[in-house]
Length: 449
Image (tube, rainbow, N blue to C red; front, side, top):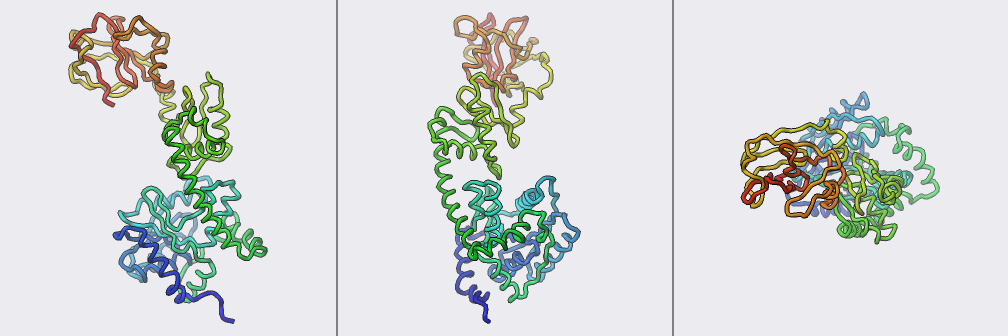
């Protein structure tokens, strides 16, 4: 009986070649192609097809994860196949970190792609329709939202990396037939049969069971992923509007945030926490941010740590701080007195930033230049009489009024001579204190960075 699947030549003429050419028009005319080749049937078929279509515009890359004894031999096979077609091939060894092996291998692979990607080069991957369906199933089982259920895109831009998957609409059955007709040589990775891995389990155990009941399951899952991509595009537009209204990548205004619906609040927090990383936080982590930080008592010094960042609330604002910034005070060595002898135009580096001594309309007396001045860290309880203000008031209150955040206050340093406060170095600049050393045409340290 003649197969109902179209032959490769028919598909090439009627569908595949036209679709590939149309998709290529989405890229700048100077674009070239970097094909990710594992040596398997899918990627070797892709190499065969694109080498015929764009012989002068492609090269290949094989990522050796070093997880199997045969991985180096597979790299040699890919290299030989490329050489036979006159295609340059890069072989890159990577070290896969411990943890979720599939996820860590994927991360190492994409880092290698970024390393070798050249200007105007598009990464081409051989994911097909069954890969798409498996991805959607696995993400559904992990509790993914709209973005996760969007699965893979035919054209996907991730920062500096543009990814093209020309086989994503092609079934696994068609790929097998085409590869057989064209006598495409390939290798078989035994890990694809190891059901210890989630994807192999899905393919060998779950897939046949579901397909026995739902014959068109593969196409249905693919359609669902496209619908989710549309939904995700709409959601991203709403998120961009909400983020613009509520703040920025580093801070959210909780008063504006509170006016959003509960659903939009959850989505905005999830996307905001993700930032530039690959994955959003789990639903439970977003809920913890609500419970432990946003809804904590007003006087609570609450902070949530997730994925190398700390999330802290201060005066109706929610901040996203790097670990280095949030833990800087704890990592600071014991306070010491710094002795300075200053001159005009001199640059000094202090905890709150870099300063340059410069003439000022109102400033410190020139008689202090060249003398030994003391710089000490704030201990708490100090009072300051700011220049042109009436009376002294607690330094802590001045810091609060200036909205200098608690995690920055370890950088506060006091400039003095003979127990006379001359001013205070802060992340927002130098504050001149009222003293007998203030004069017209004096000098001040100006914060430069």
